[in-house]
Image 1 (cartoon, rainbow, N blue to C red):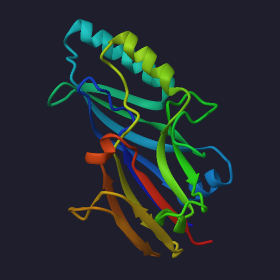
Image 2 (image 1 turned 90 degrees about the horizontal axis):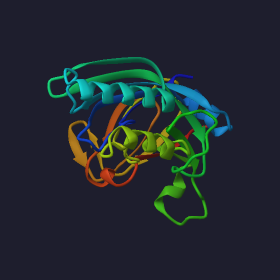
Image 3 (image 1 turned 120 degrees about the horizontal axis):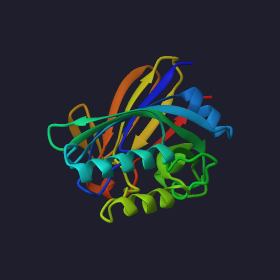
Length: 228
């Protein structure tokens, strides 16, 4: 089975004028199925973040070093590169984030030190809404480790804190011919801004971007069903 979701999400968006340039998480439907069955799966991510701090300023460099230590404690980072950006400092990270089944997308309980997780949430079929036609939704969630990380960030700089809500860009590749049904709210698709996106397909590449607007206040959600 080869079905891949590539999710571009802002895992570490800081309110101190920080900009998430890209954050790519790759997972397959095999990973999703394992999560649905109750297993915790590690999926890879790559992130590029711009921070309005000057590497050549000694005090700001000290803060940047402290930020790195905190992030490495609350995100499974394998590679962390920092350098001068066009504006401010550019941080590039690679690592993994847990994918698991949950009934919520806030304060998710995890056994690893990760402030965020990707969660597969079963749809409540008794809820009389459009979403009951789908079996699950995929969302970025904060975990029980999130408040601890924010406390440590604020000790570095009282203006420094991570946002719970993040943008998300999804690139989906389906090659095994199984029918996949998708739905999401406001989205960018093929260069157009749509109020919502809904489609069923069995062989296609697709890119969906969810950022700005309502996504400044709520997490993006991808509703889906996979043919058994």
